Image (cartoon, rainbow, N blue to C red; front, side, top):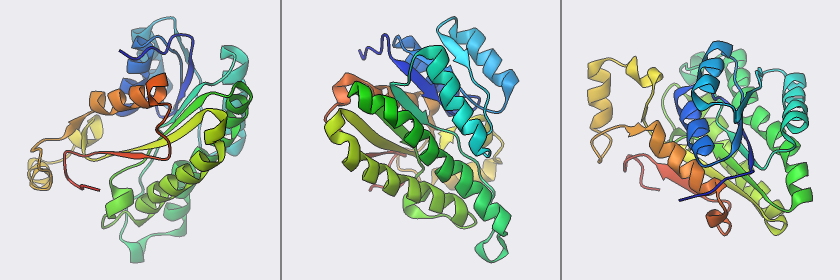
Length: 245
């Protein structure tokens, strides 16, 4: 339905369940996809699955110099970035009164500051081309909060505010900036939850199930397409009714 032929896409956090599915979906739509992450073995496995229209760009988003290198390498090897999907993120959970400065700062650095730097680097070429898509993956926790995740919630809420501000600044250049805020999604991370934990989660979700990575990827595909050219500064809450915002 949505055609991304000849579009150059960068997906961060592609070695994870959601990131890998996003890369696959955009690749299937015809895009040339740069996949980035820290787990090289997972990236290679994903690249083998997707085929020759994919290139691997390992990057540790904790290091600003590596972020600069990532942007430079993608532009040089692929010819530009038309679509940026900021999917990478980490957690360092702890109760607020016990949270260390390191736990706070590490999450903010990767989830928010790295996202800002990637947006800033990619936007230059998009402005020149007068076309671009930035899709930032936030979380339902950024709107609702969650005990033990003050750092994560702050980073994801900050991402929303930043994205809306950027959307204002670049809309006249044919660039859209949107956010997707997933709820509980079936991934290897949620597979580790106990049955009691899963049962408790299900009581919070009117849909009665967790979402799938494919459902997140489908939303990314829409936002990356020409069909979403009049949608910017929006947050798509994909959470099965857990938080009707």
